[in-house]
Amino acid sequence: MLISVYYFDFVRPALKSALQVSLPLVALAGANLKAYGPLASPSSTFKYIEMCYFLVITMSSENVEDVLKGLTLRVYRYVLKNKKETGVREVQRALKLSSPTLAVYHLEKLEEAGLIKRGASGYIVDRVYLRNLIRFRRLLVPKYFFYALFFTLAVVAELTVFRPVVFSREYVFAFIITCAAAVSYLYETVMTWMKETI
Image (cartoon, rainbow, N blue to C red; front, side, top):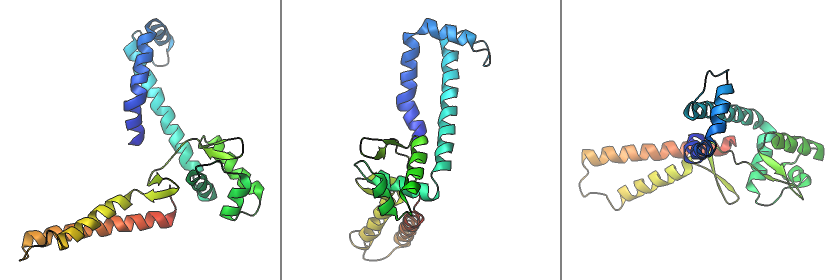
């Protein structure tokens, strides 16, 4: 979903602008793309570029999912929490790794995947990849936490501000639904925290 929003808000308009500026070159390129068929118009070439873009994004996401597992995921989470550059020794001490070589291995693995980059004194995040978490300063907060907080406050409000003198079936039903939603999102929040996912 986030990839789609990013694409339609930023990438698609940029591609259209580029095509409008260089219409003759696009038409020529379209005519030479025989694998896709005769692309004589810029609009058909644009559709081809869109298809290639989505293919690259999908392959990139699959590669990231393969990389972010086990100890490599823990290293990425640690670097992601730091606003400053993170050194090899710092990663080793923080995650209690057996040797600096092991820390270097996982850092280079993340660098090859395009998730972090090497700086002057260490590594820093180059690409933020989060599915179930939201980064808030140095904290990684499960996105379900905000839903849990909202429904918990709703339960408190129903018990205090909106509490009727006489309980009706409608009030009891609404209260049960709100409690169920609060408990469900609290459970998802705790599970996300315990699993240490991304």
